[in-house]
Image (cartoon, rainbow, N blue to C red):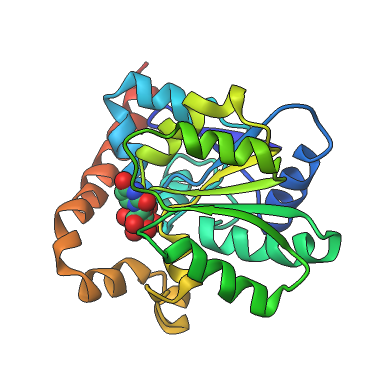
Length: 243
Ligand code: UDP
């Protein structure tokens, strides 16, 4: 599995098949492994934040989430195969979990969201053992860590938004009795039906970001990171050439 660095953040060059098989290989090893899905906003945030950059680079798998990251890899002449968004990766893992009757823990979202996500997932995949749910708003996470450790899940979907989820996973990785910790943002909202994924049309044209902006105009501030990200990538390429 090759990788490239975008503004100092490692992105692994995997397509969906590669990502799924790599994640499944983590089940055969000791200790917890982390999976992050950096998008351009997250990478741009890490640009001047060494600590967060180190957190992102500490994972066992980082997939390219978002067309901005795919374009950046092309600009840097080290293209990734495709976009592997966190929600889509989770969707491809669910049938395998169902077939193998694996244990999944859902962590994140507002009160009731993880429970609703559990109900919806079980409608389609009744053999997944969804062994625990916790909401993502807490002051002390001791009970959450204890709950996860008591259940010993194969997978934990950690859906706290970036950078909270990546920092939480990094901080607690060593003390969690789980195999795969996946930081996948707003995915539980989508599974629960409290947020909608963009229609196919937007996804195909790579303008899912536009759909999310129309639905939630207050995201404009966050989205301004995208052009800044593009400029920083181009500058970093020039910088490397001159180096
Ligand atoms: N969230 C949470 N705890 C927090 C902050 C956010 O559980 O302290 C949840 C929030 O309810 C939402 C998700 O994290 O379900 C973040 O969603 P967002 O769309 O911002 O993430 P993205 O997918 O864009 O990374």
